[in-house]
Structures are given as C-alpha cells and as structure tokens.
Length: 274
Image 1 (tube, one colour):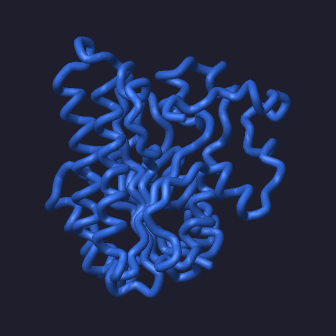
Image 2 (image 1 turned 90 degrees about the vertical axis):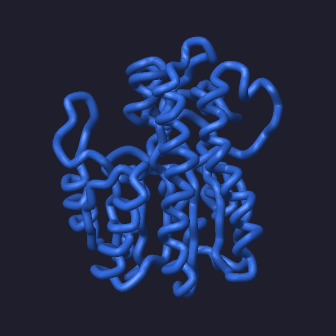
C-alpha cells in the first residue's frame, strides 16, 4: 500500500528507522534516508549508504542524505533534494533521537542541549520543512517515535532531561494533530511495549542480556507500516503502542518478534515509559 509513496525517515541508517524503511521498501516505496552517519562508525553499525543498498535490495528506491537535523538549512536542502528526486513527500517519520538516562546533577548541559535540539527541535524543524509537500499528498502522515504523554512524576524523576526531550516530540503530535486536522495531515506517535534490540539498548540498558530480553525492530516497523497505510483523515492524534497496533491488525502471536523466542513474554524487558 506504500508503493511509489515517498517517506523521509530521520535516523534511518540503523535500528528502528532502518527497519521502517525496509518494511516500506517491500511495497516499492521511495525512501529518503536521513542520518548523520556517512562513514562507518567504530561502535555503531551501518551508514546511510549501506541502508540505501538494503532498501533497494528490498524493492524500494533510496536517496541517502547525510543530514544533522539540528541544522535547519541542511534539513530544508534535504527536503528539496527529496522532492526533486521523487516529486514530493507523503510521509515523515521522526525517528532520530538522542538519549541520556541521567539525573539532574549528572546531566551535562551539553547532553541536555543535544537531546532537546535533536528530539524536540529536530522534530519541529523536519515537520516545518516537510509541511508544504505533505499538504499536496493524497494521504499524508507524520509519525513520531515518542511515548504517550503521562504527567505522572515517576516518568520524570529518574531522567527529567530525557523525558522532557521525548515528551516534546509527543507534544508536537498533540498540537499538530489539532492544527492540521482540517488539512487531513495525520500526526501520530508510536512507542514500543518492550525494549527493542538496538545499539542504544545494548550500550545503555544492559548489554547482550538486555538485547536477549528485547524484541526486534521489526515489530515497530510492522506497526508503523499499519499506521501509515491508514486513511490520514481518520487516524490522527493517537499515541500508539506497537503490540496493540498489531493485535488490532489481527496479529495474535508475537513470539517471532522476540530476539530469543524462548523467553516468556512476561519476562521481556519493559520499556521505561510504560
């Protein structure tokens, strides 16, 4: 259902962003791969070019662009290149994110600024740049990889700076869904029920054992695909959880999404925002 549609996906050189790109590519979608990694990273897998090669092998068309979404001019240039190459933009996926799970005294202001500039401001910049083209799409969607809003103190206490930055993305959903409802542009958020096997989980949440107790990025990708195929005018302002989306689509057995299928579902590592 995403054949010939153009998706601009931030942070799509690896992890969840790349998984969403590959799922759309299987339909024959056009993917604008927006990320900073153009040269191999010593600690992180993949570049924009390796992701683009996988996308094209999966059946899609790819445009790899090295972009720091903190740079407004670079984002606008990337959007212009995407429109020149593919004729428009139908879907924006704001996946790029910075994380630092530390308390107030332990959070360097440099990390505070990075999280807010990438998560909240970067999301806003990308939406602003894509909006003129989304208005022209027959079924425009913007999807944020951000958690449902919950003002309980327990979600802020352990890492207030990070929560503020991620909730900034979710507040964009809340406000923009209302602002652009009449225009028919959908704004939704998607968040995983459990930890997802990405470099961030391995490096920040417990290494290989945390990965073993996680689900694969494909569960988020399949949920994102289901959302992005829905009619934009009938699906906006929602805060989706990946397994709930899939169960609504009739997917009953989720074991194949687990890194280790032998782990009991109740023993999976829960996401720290749920």
